[in-house]
View: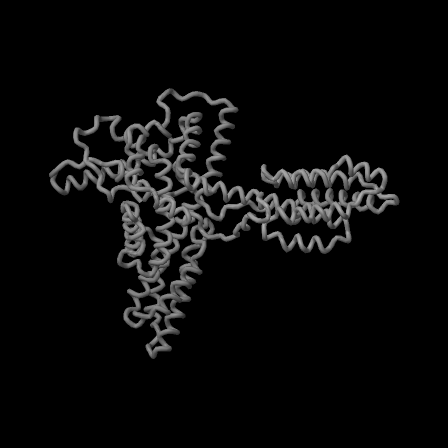
Length: 521
């Protein structure tokens, strides 16, 4: 913990998505270095499962692997989540644990109050507190703060304080004031006001000690968060290499740790192969196309946007971003549904509501609010869409009446409601159209070496959700870029085995174009 002239700023409590901060880091990776990490033969030995037969793991090896995975997750979270910070521990109100803790704490402070009010006072409990406080304060010092360390040891000399207590000459009030003053020099700026209040309210010694320990706990948390921020800068420079080495250590102990990743890439490669066969059939066999690894990886990452987590576990290489990817999925599903509803509204009602951005904005917000939470298992989408239809008809009639248009007829309202309810069907043409164009949008971003320039270029029919789609696109591409920077050698090794194990590689394999690469961001 630095001293006052170099104190850390307080941590933020913001809930905004973290991966946007990693976008700048990922975008700084050049296309050449990323492609080399993906295609290099020398790098294929990294993060690839051993070819030796599977072995039985001991409990110690399993526990060690679990610790390695925990460290990997923590390092990844710190690197990509700008808002990651530690919160002071708080127990739920009314819980048994909190009740027991509060009871024990009350008994402790009651004993201290009783000792200090005795005649003559007893200082045993107070001295133990001072000793504990001294150790905590010393733990905040930088290794080079020898002068302050010496001063603290001299003022809070436990042997001397015990001798003074035996002679009823100890100045507990003065020692507490010194401790508060020292805390003021070591705390971060956000604690200054609390330190000031504590120094001005020093009448009750028990209350003062309680507040000192409360503030010391907060300062411990501040110190941890300061170190997390310092570590984040290091991880952002060397995070990919660090994560790759951590994952390799897990893989060395657990060779099966890439089974789901292999299945994920195999599925994408099979889809690519089938697409190529269809193209060759349509072109009557003119030319011979061979699936490329970059093309397969592009398709694999596109699959993540529609991944069914309840049916298939995510690839191991994406588990650290599972929550972030689920949030992107859920928000994407929501804005797709909103766009589908808006397309139905404007195609059904027609020119009477065209060119009214304020009305369009109200309908969009209204639909989004009513469909919020549609990813939840207990969400009744059909019932929610009925509510959306009723609100939309009411809003449309109000707008039409204000502009001297006749309101919607009952028949038209019924048609509008029926079409909106029909988007729950997977083969609904409007739903299919929107989902296909969203997939096209993300595939362009994944394939383009400079996706930031394509974020605002949404396909026709998706203009209503352009801001939200661009935001999700930036977050998703940022995750993809960083993931490939870390696991590019892993994917390269797996795809080479999948493509060439059953048959030798072609004499002149086609080179993927720049737009096929997801690593060159």
